[in-house]
Image (tube, rainbow, N blue to C red; front, side):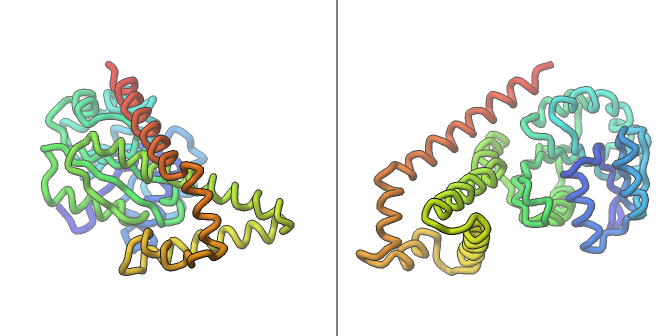
Length: 275
C-alpha cells in the first residue's frame, strides 16, 4: 500500500470535513481523498479543494484503501448493507466515527471478515483540538492501526482502548465532555454578570481562563489536583469557592453525570445495533 493510501469518506458532514481539513493542512494529497455524499452542495467545496467527489458510495469504496464512515448512526446499517459487496471485493480498512454502533454489527452488515476501527471523536476536532478514543477489532493489522491513527491525528490526539465497551467511558469523558465545560463556562459568565461585570467582560475572562487552565494542565509535570492545590491559598479567596463546590457535592455529581452518560451510551449501542 502506498505511503498515502486512498481514502473514501462516506458522508461529508462536519466531522468528515474536519478530518479532511486537518489532513490537507498536514500535507495529505487531496487527490488521494474521495468524498461521497448525496448533498451536492457539500461536495462542491471539497471538489474545489482537489478531492474526488461522487454521489455513488460504491464508486468511492472501489477506489479506496481506507473507508471512513462519517454518517449518522441511524443510517449506518442501510449504508453498510448498500456498500457490502464493494467492501467484500476491495477489503479496505473501515474506520467508523458513527457513535454507538458496535464492530460486530458493522461487520455483519458489511458481509463479514472486515477490518474495522471504531472512533469516538469529539467536537473540538472541528478546530483540530479533538480527543479520539479508538478500538480495533481482531482483523485490524498493526499497519492499519497506524494508518487510522495518522488519519485521526489530523484532528487532535488519539488513544486506544483494549475493550470495545470502554468506548462508552470515552463517550462519557471526552465525547460528551465539551458540553460539560460549556456548561461551566455558561455558569461562570452568568455568575460574573450577577457580580456586576458586563456580559462581554465576563465572557472574555471566562473563556481565556478556561484556555489558560487547560494549557497549564497540558504543559505541567504535575496533575490537575496539584495545580489546584497550588492556586488555593489557605484562608484565601479561591479556597472559599472550592469549599463551596466540594461541600455542594460537585465531585459526586460528576461521578453521577458521567455514569449516566456511560449508561446511555450502552443503551444506544443496543438500540442502534438491532438488526
